[in-house]
Length: 111
Image 1 (cartoon, helix red, strand yellow):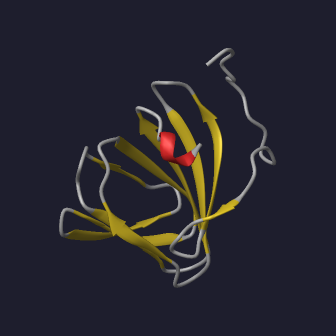
Image 2 (cartoon, helix red, strand yellow):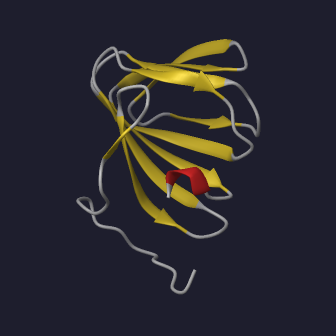
């Protein structure tokens, strides 16, 4: 990376459709860390998957049934969760919602 971007406004970044029918936009990233927003409509599913990155997620809007390693909990606006490296995880939006995810290291597949 030639220059590190350390601030992002609320309308920056291009929304991209995800394979499971939701939307995401990369807000910021360095080699070590990435911040991504994910938008869901009520009933939207973040398909079960895993990746080597450690992920932390903050529920900025709405509520989600979050499954990590076979355990499901409901997490609402203001709550958060961590996904360990390679843990199988997914979400179901119980209402329109927005997740703010961070990944370490960054997800090259999102760039």
